[in-house]
Image (cartoon, rainbow, N blue to C red; front, side):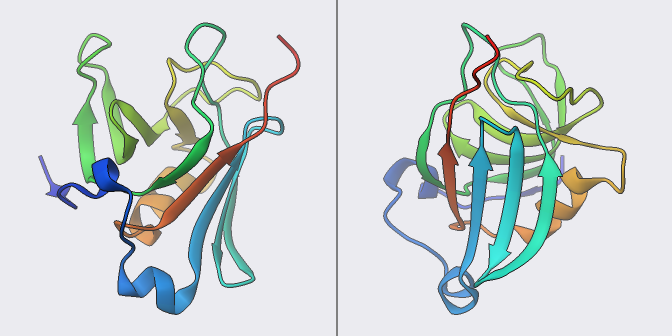
Length: 143
């Protein structure tokens, strides 16, 4: 398994890399619109639809930092499900690629990015750095 690791960054939440500070890297995830936007300063560098956690398995809102990155990760909670291009945000919560990314919350709490349509999952994985701030906001109102 190919892996890039930032040991402890998701648990402390107290640091950010020099790259993030210098370039103003940040990620905004809106659960209301089911979108992810990645920025460097004021420049939008990536925008994609996402699918967040469904009822009973909600994706938590809050401020996080990108943690460990795994080219291929397997879920410890859900039948060893493959999670390509995974970026850990907290505990068992990841942003990762998935083949089914409907326009509504459908995951078990992770944030799914499409593997098709130009593969935003891979593009996000290659762009994001350990320590990049990730802000998750909003609520899905169609439940």
